[in-house]
Image (tube, rainbow, N blue to C red):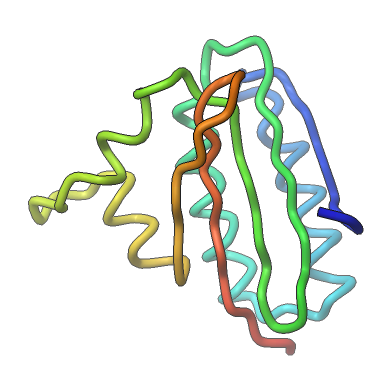
Length: 125
């Protein structure tokens, strides 16, 4: 992806606020509604929670017209895929969260692990 914003941070909760600042700047620059920004933030936070204890996690974000595309990873192979691919049982889990706040998601295999790709259609303020 060209024109991406790419941020690599330690996989520790203390650093997740850095991702929030970067996403906030992106939201401001593209005049996103607060609802669109909060949905995207919830999705990325849900995934960042699964990265705790990893040496690093990378968040890549791109605005493409009225869509924001994000990719988060790497996750250990098989660590998030089962949760995202099984049907939701009515409880609150990562699958249900992503189904609620983004328009699409998928898991991509790579040499360094699994990467979760998100798509969110956004509105400008």
